[in-house]
Amino acid sequence: MELIEVIAKSHFEDSRIGAVSRKQRLRIPKELAEFLVNLDLVDYINPPLALVKQTPQIEATESGGDEPQSWSQPEQVSQSETAQAPKRGRRRKTGEY
Image (cartoon, rainbow, N blue to C red; front, side):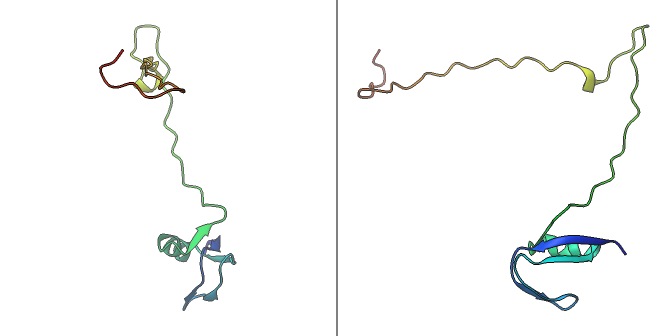
């Protein structure tokens, strides 16, 4: 049984662990921790790490192999020009230059 460390966000009572006060640290089973996190009663202190699957990297060949999309360069984003509002004086009416 894997135990996870959590901290209570509010006061509550559970039949499996008893009365819990706010900011109390608990070491509880993983399934119970997930259940209480979904109810928004506790937060993980050190969240459990998810398994990360690594994909094999494919090297481009000299004979003209296509590169995967993840290796392509991103396009440049054009900056839009915005009019700055005057900092002093009254506002101009629309259509007035």
